[in-house]
Amino acid sequence: MPQASAHFLMPRVDYRLFAALALSLLLHFLPLLSNFDFGQNFRSTVAPLTAELRPPPAPPAMPPLSLPEQPEPSTEPPPPPARPAPPKPAGKAAAPAAKTWTQAVREHLKKLDAADQFYPAEAIARGEEGEVLVLIIIDETGKVSAARVEQGSGHPLLDAAALRAVRSLQSLPADAPRQVVLPVRFRLR
Image (spheres, rainbow, N blue to C red):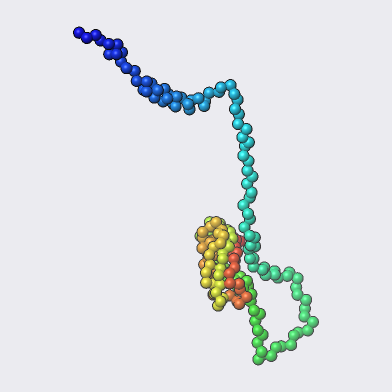
């Protein structure tokens, strides 16, 4: 009977397996080492970042075009004329003073208001007031070719009424600009 050698009694140990296991444990342990303090105080000296915000640039100042106010009639009676003016000849009719485009717009809006076609009845019932800025584009013949609300009043009824009123302008005098922002005010009396 052959003798058993020590070679068969002790299994052979594969050191490569232990080396791989040790390397794996070391690699998994490295991230944990960053949490330990080894007696050195490494404090970061990062300064806080500060920023100042500038206000947004103001839009170019475009003053709203306001219609010149008609002078109110004076309460003082006019002085009596020194002498009566001579009658004009019947053959010559005085030429009417040419209206400016602002006067034409004002007269048109007054006509609509007199006919109760300007201020919507529902807006009056709700007590809505406001100002609508309407951009109007006028063609060569003096007719409004396009109109849109540039800045609304906050009340859709008033915005729509302002557009209707501006679009109903028939023709404007020759001095009217080709493009203008027109303020349309709605005030309850």
